[in-house]
Amino acid sequence: MRAVTGYATTGPHGPLRPIQFTRRALRPDDVAVRVTHVGVCHSDLHAVEGIAPGAPRLVPGHEFVGEVTEVGAEVTRFQVGDAVAVGNIVDSCGECENCLAHREPYCREFPTLTYGGVDRRDGTPTQGAYSTGYVVRDAFVHDLPAGLDPAATAPLMCAGVTTWSPLSRAGVGPGTQVGVVGLGGLGHLAVKFAVALGARVTVFTTSAAKADDARALGAHDVVLSTDPGAMAAVAGRLDFVLDTASGAHDLAPYLAALRIDGTLCVLGLPEQYVVSPMSLLGRSLTVSGSGGTAETQEMLDFCGAHGLTADVEVLPIDEVNTAFERLARNDVRYRFVLAVAS
Figure: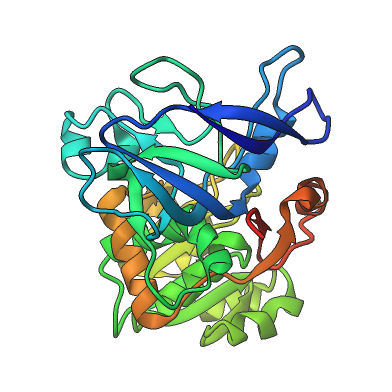
């Protein structure tokens, strides 16, 4: 067992406070990681806000980078000192068809989450990476390409792979016309990926003030989605639209922007969507989640080759409550990252 310091819940709507707790002793296929940077995701905020009275303390954090400090006896892929990254799942059954296809988030027995999950071997609750150290199965640890800023790489382990996976599966590349709805934590990475893949990128936004930001990220066109004339001008032009907006909204205008046989892929997952069946004629609608271990390493390698990372604001971990307060107001461009190791 190894002692670590983490930031944990104190009850409903209470601040996160530092605590001491222990990580498990290394199993043969485990890797111990000294956490250097951890991203702050909206799902972290929702998990903390959803804590019930009397619930056990929860340490959030599911997108992090760090340095290997120890490896189990059977680990061959990593050694002490390696720079690594870990995402939102840390184990799966490894035997179902989805796991065997490296689509572990869709494990038939449900994957073990980085926090808020249950360890598959000893039944203990998993605690996240708002902490100085983590112990994780080697199969769910990823090589961190040299040259990438560790702080700006941490959000790639959640927002990055979530946007990379549908773009990659759709075969986005030169000659492809891609639309991105929303320019937040997910959307800004979707723009960077699509541009680097060689696509022509159109950003849809409800805020005219974001036009310059979208173009600075590489977008070729910006469409104000509240302008009927601007939306009509793009009708039938795009091959693939990635919708990252989290609020409830009508999908029909984005379906109309697609060519025949084009695809609208939804990532934002609001509580409900408004969509007319007639708007689906000649188009397809998909709902996408994160990729598995193979896609995650593919995404990291692509980022390493193209020098891509998230746009982040870095705060020391003792300012985690400030990050949460600002995130709740959407006062971030585009992701917060907590610096754990000084």
